[in-house]
Amino acid sequence: MGTALSRSGPRRGGTRAPTRGTADAPPRPARRSNRVGPRLDADDLRAFGTKLRAWYRRHARDLPWRRTRDPYAILVSELMLQQTQVSRVIDFYHRFLDRFPTVETLAKARESQVVAQWEGLGYYARARNLHKLSRAVVREGFPTEADQLRQLPGIGPYTAGAVATFAFERRAPLVDTNVARVLTRVFAPRLHPKRARDQKAIWAIAEATLPRAGRAAWTHNQALMELGALVCTARVKHCGRCPVRGLCKSRDQV
Image 1 (cartoon, rainbow, N blue to C red):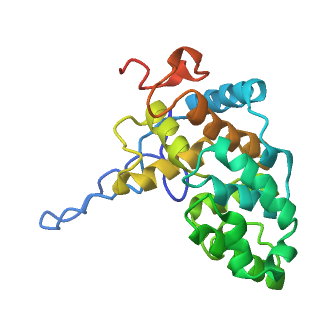
Image 2: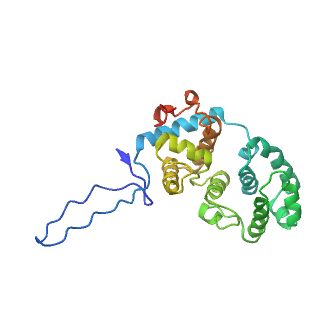
Image 3: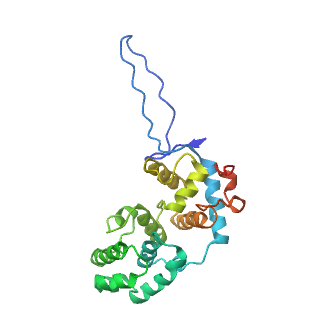
């Protein structure tokens, strides 16, 4: 039996049976469905998560931001990784944290010092937003939930979900380029990751695939990104190495 995606979770029951009325009574208007995205099979969702997380435990790269639950360090890594390859970010990440090891030291610095330390990564608005954010966090504390994190300067839905999951082990969906590619190829080939009208459906699929426990969600979200980066890449689909190829609706497409 399929699970329909909607803001309020799975649909309950079927269509309402027509009611009788007077002969000239207008027909009841059809009830609109609140479903967002494709109908997903519950067994497929469980199998997808199990296979994905088992693959990650065997094949995950050892990246420095995966060794910490410090929300500040994780936030630095997430902002650096926007528009930038992992191989370039690693050295910048270490140097930045050596210079500004805590959110308090960053908040006390001048913006010009922060931007100078960011030099070479480009997209300097990221550094300026991080500096503004650090001062807000020092005043008010680090939010732990995705919706709260979104109120911070320069934090969008992906970054909010990433920090909530990777720092605080919250059950929060996240969708970046890699995640969107994996989810659409596996579950909904008709959706396009870069098409604005498809974004809500893709986020709904990400929500539906999440395990219930926050600790498992940490592994799950890391695994989704890792699969998109290493196996289900933009240029080449390495289907022979994919742990979820048996469930993938795009596996026969060139």
